[in-house]
Image (cartoon, rainbow, N blue to C red; front, top):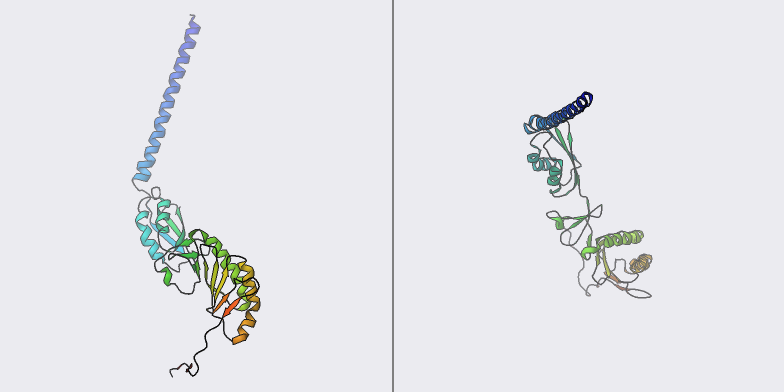
Length: 258
């Protein structure tokens, strides 16, 4: 081998060695940087969370309830606090439908809470929210002023749609649905705001209700009061049950305290 060839081989070997050395140094520097970040920035809590901001349109719960629940999860540094854990804890509170948790550099965590807004009762002590979700809170059955919807467990969307549609039909009569029930056979029954019970059956329920609504004014003029019950499960008409007249001679006056 000539001298020039041996020189070239030595230079090549030297280049490989230098390259490996530089690569090793860079790798170790990267590891050192990671360790510095972990131990120097994260592990030693050099950037602790100092502020917890809680916001939302609170009606059923309070900001203080949310704060008390999530505060134990906010301890630590900006890098170690886990927004997902905070969000999950906030969602466990009654009435909370959604929670957005964000970290703001260098020392703040914000929690924005949305509540369920109930529009109706559902089966098994549940409530229906404005978005159609069902949820449970303590004392749900005692909440006043909401209609009662009932049906098989998998029929909530169908019952909600029928409730809204039936109310639209009843609007000109001044009535509204206080209770609506879909039984397992697919038959519909209602109780109106004035107390009238309406049997719609399984077939053509909407058309049957429209037929009653068109005759509602005439029905009330017959006796001046709302019917006790209306059975619409007939092909060409419906049956009406009126309040029973008091026995002859019975005093129907109501005493008024003065």
